[in-house]
Each structure stands twice: as structure tokens, then as C-alpha cells.
Length: 308
Image (cartoon, rainbow, N blue to C red; front, top):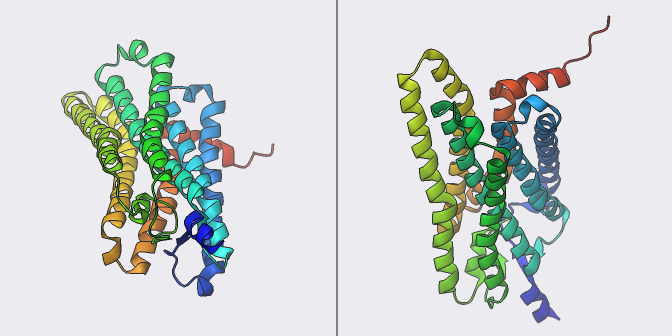
């Protein structure tokens, strides 16, 4: 029975002084989770109900915020349960599912940001062709690819890992990330190669494309009139801030897996918490405050009705 449990369950050992701070951890993370769901859902709701926000740029923003809400829902309930449990364990199939959700949804963010950068490029650099290029069909294709391509990529290592024998049953983490490969007796060459391909397809190439498009936008805006420069700054700055934020957190995740043995436990916990805490709150804050049309609808939504 014990052997079966050892094979089936993984111990999450990334928590720090759970016996002392479990209720504080729970309160903070529960509050953050509610804020994430409410803030992201509010902006998505506004984009859905207002026809003037039914443009490609706002549709991509809604998809991005929907990603944050779904990813948080895949991660937070388990985190909250762990904070109140005596033992922080997770079954290996659920661990692999969490791994799949974390990386497939996370990777789709890079592709959505790439689609948004292309949308801004066409809007600013080719305004007359914008209606014929960024059609509903084009937007739909971008959305499907942004979700489907990462899911197919991440499904491969998840499925292969399910068939791999484990020699270690303690994960130095608070959720299942790419550190699960350290649990395997022998690291699969196929998984390693597929991981490099996925990194190239889902992160590096979209990042290079984003840098290229924004460089073109900046060059053309610099040569154009003041109105074009203002439009470029208003619409591109929020996307760049979100891109920088997400890129830093992605680098965090890679760093944790590579140097986890050299990091103090508290430092590792703080880095992992930032991945699931900071970015899902940052997105609606940036888009809600920096995007003029969304900000306008937010003010109307929360402004008290005037009594005549």
C-alpha cells in the first residue's frame, strides 16, 4: 500500500514554515485569487457587452485576461487546499495535468502577444489595409492557433512523462512545473528535444517577431505626424509592459528549474509565488488603466449613479 502511494503521490516540499503561517498564506492567496477572478472577469465582461470594444485589439486582450483567469483557477484551488492540509501532496496524474495547464496556457500568452503586436503593426503602419487584413476570420484563426499550438506541444511531454518511471517523489515546488523532470529515473531524450523545440516555437520565435514588429512601429511612428506617435504610444505601451512582465516571470520559471538546488527555500518560494500571483493581477490593471476605451467603461461601471 505504501509503495503504491509512493508511486502515485508526489510530495510538494516548496512551502516554508507551513505550521506557522498556513492561515496567513491561505488568507493572502484566497484574497489574491478573488481579485484575479473579479478583475479579469470585469474587463472581459466590458469587452463582451460594448460593441465599440469588438475590435481585434480588444478581443486579443479579452483572450489574454481569460487565460489569466483559467490558469489561476487551475492553480489556486490546489494551493489553497495545501495551505490548510497537514501534508502537501498531489497525485502524479493531477500533477501532470497541472503541468499541462500551466505551460499550455502560459505559452499561449506569448502567441497572443505576438498576434497583438501584428494587429498594432497593421493598424499603425498599414491603416488603409487594416479592415481587409484583420478580419473576423483572421482573428479567429489567430485565437485558435494561440490556444491549439501550445496545447499540442505541451501534451507530448505530459503524455510521455506519464509513462516514465519515477525514482524521486519529492518536488521542490508548490505546484507542478518543469521540475517534474527531476523526478524521473532517466530523463527522456525525446522529451528534452521536444522541450527545446517548444521553447523555440512558443517563446523565442514569438518574442523575435514581437521585437521586429514593435521596432517597425517605432521607426514608422518616429517619421510620422504627432497623432500617429500618440496612437502608437497609447496602444503599444500596455502590450510592451505586459510582455516585459511575462518574459521576466518566464525567465523566473526557467531559473527555478535550473538552479533550484542552489537557492534558499524562502527565495524559491517567493519566486514561484510571483509566477502565479503577480502577472494575473498585472494584466487587468495595465489594460484597465492604460487602454483609454476600457478605462472609460470601467469608470462608468463603478461610478455611482447620479441622483436627480
